[in-house]
Image 1 (cartoon, rainbow, N blue to C red):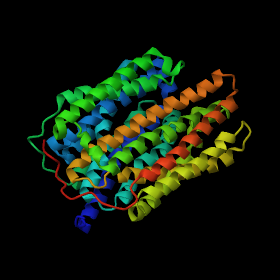
Image 2: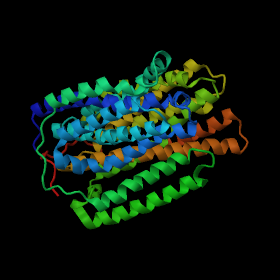
Image 3: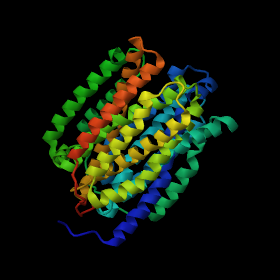
Image 4: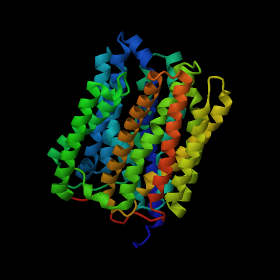
Length: 472
């Protein structure tokens, strides 16, 4: 057992976490704000919804390409410099988006935003864990995930206000104050990290993994459309992505620690169990979140903005459970916190599996809060446990792996539940029955996730000391 990290490290970690939150708010809010504005953007830029959908697709694909480079880039230029560079890229992308003159230019500028966000999101966890030396991971993850909790609550509201009272350009200009404040705070408070001039980029690994991620995300995104997994533009990218991923794994095994991502890290059971559970969580939980706004729109006749507002109780539940889950997981470990969280999510989902078009909305809102409470209880300990028993130099790659597990798992989950819903409708079920069928699937998968969570480590342990990035 290593010596505990001194309390000043915790103070630095907390200051680091709050500094990162300010800049991170821009990236997280941006996705939730833009998602409700697609029809407005299509109208204002005189294009179809199919074309303007690429405003989201291009952003997600660029994010997926950028994520695998973060560990190398941090070793090369240092965490503080990389964070400020990513935030600057996101700021430039936001300003360019606000100046877009047609759909094509907006899509191109969203790629710039996606690159910045793809660096920022895994780097947030890395910098906090490294600053703390592994102390109080649950509590710190609860803090640094604040933007993720607030995004679903405030994003649709901010987007609705902007679209009602301002022009669409402000959907992107609203990011500017967060970025500027985040840069100022980062320059002042983030700890400096000496870069490694010997760090080399695994170009072949990057050339395999980045297009593999793009293929998987693009194929999964297209499988949400009519035809599902039978669509050519779904199955072909998925097959290419899977093949490239398999080649990347074989290549990385040969390269060892000099690979783009050292896959030998999967020998650490806390990381491998968290990776698998984060992927499955994306399928069982976040995929099911696709159903909720559709239920309110298709069955309860809510418009997009009202559907977003109706989901606020779920975000509030997540917000309130984060700190509790973080503290308890620091004391007793992640296993039972996650198990209980999944049970709570299941209990919050069952009423939707039984809901009709006349079920009182206030009842559903109560159970949305319950469901959100379970979401926070699950995500915080699972995110934290991934970094147990790792040396500080291994943390950046662990952050990348957990981010990829969440992102690909969520995309796969959305595709699965879209297929379940459309399949039920195609078989002759009416709208209410189809949604009930899909929500029962969500409940069943959540129960399976609760069982799988028993495989998580049960004790509270820490990251090993040695916070300098590894050299390759």
